[in-house]
Length: 132
Image 1 (tube, rainbow, N blue to C red):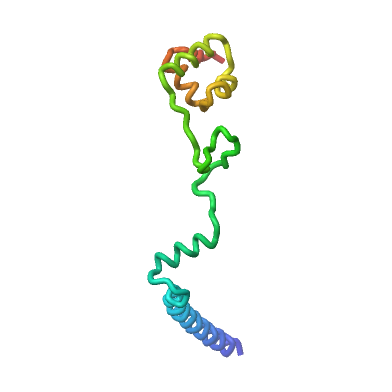
Image 2: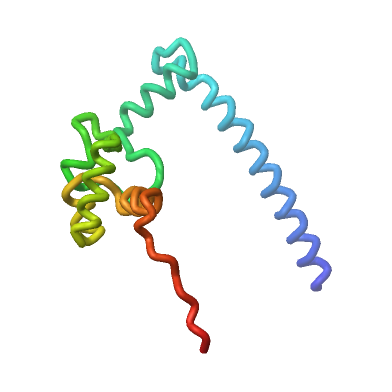
């Protein structure tokens, strides 16, 4: 009795595999003619139209820029040009005991950029190892 059920199961599995291959071949043929049914000459044009219809999505990874200062009108991130004059002003602010976050807000730089300027100017204190 169990062998009969095993044979039936194998038969159903083979039918399912046949159906799966038929579905895949029909899907391929239907997708191949889809651009021509909608009046597009090439697949590239059809894909471009689909992307436009789907709407824009944010590209890339990372956090979404929320501040007005960080994003321009086109939505792309803007970068502050670090000039020698700006470096001198940052060094002066560090020597005036301003915090890193205050310098970042004042000059529109990132904190790592401020740290790099401090390091290049020799204003970063070396760590002292304390024996335990």
